[in-house]
Length: 316
Image (cartoon, rainbow, N blue to C red):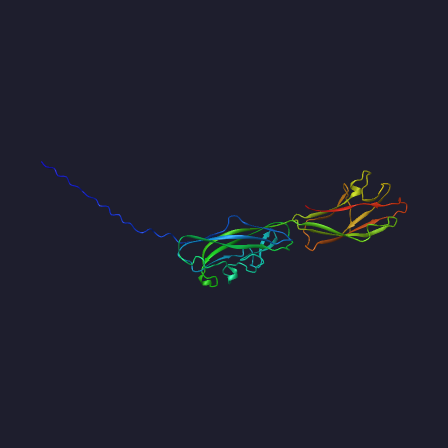
């Protein structure tokens, strides 16, 4: 008997097609973390922030980067907030001095209000990137309580013509925390009255002006000013108030002070507080008069008498 074998042939049909095109890419990113403006009354502060835009695929005929007003009620100025206090700042298209304030729809936008270019208008087979800069700026001259002020703004990437609201298509966005660190400023200086270096201690004086003292502080916790008598601080004889001392130590004459119209008292270790404030001053300085009174004595030993007063301002 003859056995026959059959052979089945399976044919696999493999179809090879062109690769699926990669998805179009158009987006941006800003550096991670926040923006930190180191602010002070005397100096402007500016920080440049770089934004990188990525593109791949179909060309983008027009696009722009915008920034909203954050928590502020308007763009001019933008404001950082700390409690009930505010610090004015701005975001510019160009380095200061600048008037090119970056804004966002639905504001009517001019070229000075956005970041844009002719980049990305052609199709790109591979990812291309471009970096653009914006500038965060806080001006000097703002005398506000020291501390950290914050705001959060959102940057937007749009397709479309910035000047034609009907073409605006939001593509990407990123939020940035803006921190303004206002430096603490506490300062004091005095203007000495003429003639006080040489006073006749045999003749009584009542509320004689010896100096005009100027205080300034933006400490958020308040500040103090103290006065220290050199003689009282170094006294070992039990004195409780300041005094003039003879150059040889053989004679002395007590005196009293008033500051801003108030009698200086509460002396301890040669010092007394003359200002104790929980508030900030004005930037134009707070002026106060320092006056001296004493009863003249014709029986004092002849010679030179002296005391040294030191005023110290401190944050609480």
